[in-house]
Image (cartoon, rainbow, N blue to C red; front, side):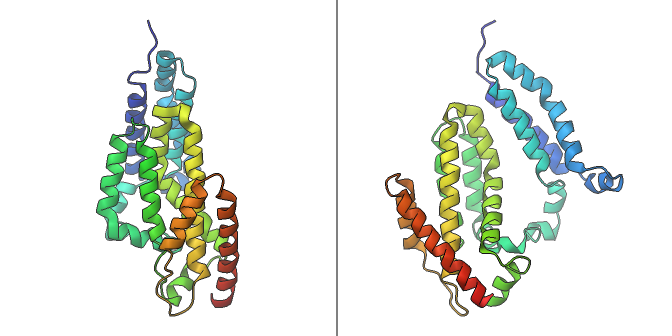
Amino acid sequence: MTRTQNGSPLMAILLLLIIWGIHSYREDTDFLRLLHIAPRRIFMVEYSLLILPFSMLALWLTGDVYMPIIMQLGALLIAALPTGLYALLRTKKGRDLAWIPTELFELKTTFRKNYLSIALLYILALTSAMFTISMPLALIAFLMLASSAYESIENRELIEASFQRNKSILSKIKKNLLAFHLFLIPLYILFLLFHLHYWYILLALIVFASGVLTFAISYKYAHYYPGRQRANNTLAITFFFLFFANPFFAPVALVYLWVYFRRAKRRLDCFV
């Protein structure tokens, strides 16, 4: 039998979607905790065993050792996601996104305002994942949308509430970057399933997006002042975007980022 890659990525996608669907309906997390069992470990073992025969089949069909590895990593990532998503979304708390931490209030507000556009863009990106350019374009679109979330400067009470646990600007940046990339994990997995030989492009895009978002957050809080309503960051982010995307000017962009990160840290120390 001639080995072929036809259908293997689609099979992997279908299996991971089924596992994610099962995971979204699970409501046994609290029960497992009562038994003093770590739920995530149980989920990881279950999903790994569930996908193991199919990943071996993919290895036999394609001869590509990376395909089963990606399938297993996808199953492990799903196991790390929150369970009971379907039940949560049926409640008012779930629909109002009250489950999203206060530290992510900018992203939460942007999602509420643009949920329809975000959903359509996400579906389009998922259904066109076989095209190499699809994921990079989707990531840039989501990056531009996420960057715009840091344009407005909210009232002091909300700012203080978001920094109540940790007043570090670095902590806020880490949480926002984590939320952004977790949201895009399905697109990352699909890109690797279809275009594994371009993995370095995915890595470069993740680093690039992280840099732009870090700058957007730093710029906003570097200009924070009680009573101010907007950071007016559109032009600054555009320049940073263009400079950071160019290898020759990337060092200048990094210096620019460091300057505003330090300013943001000092401004928060003064007012929060």
